[in-house]
Image 1 (cartoon, rainbow, N blue to C red):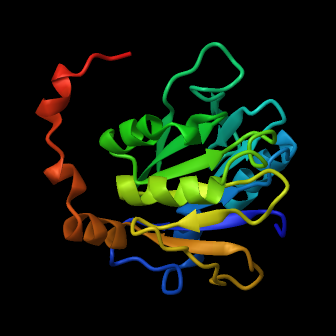
Image 2: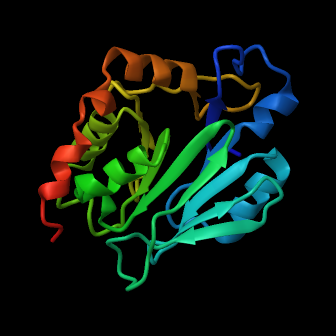
Length: 215
């Protein structure tokens, strides 16, 4: 699957893709496909690999396929072209994953609400007409830092995606399998460590926000 980027989701410090059996690794894999990939390719990736798959169509919809290749969710973005939309999260590999599409990335409150809901990873699929107008890499890195989450940015026309950690660090690619070259490891243990070192949500005085008028 040379056109697929694999994220290994490690739920705790006891698990590492280098040391685990192939069955465990595949079960905790999240496959990211290039924007505009045909839906059948995403179905095939999940069914053959045993993990979840994410792909974005031309209209900005992000589709989630489970480990059997079945479509379980389709997200158009809160700030996308569609009139209707709602926050979308799914649990996989011990991570709570949130989705971002349309112009969601440009609004800090979108990622913050996902983080407050418990998201560990936010997968961002901006539309093709956004990248040229905004520094998306900077936006994505800041969203990771201010919410202490992992962020995956899938820019149309560019692959593999960019991955940022909770300290704003760029997560480099590695090679854990025999044939894969496009992959990265995300450790929830490292995520929790970062949240302990920088307890932003403990410092946040949410009671002070109740007096603000919601616009």
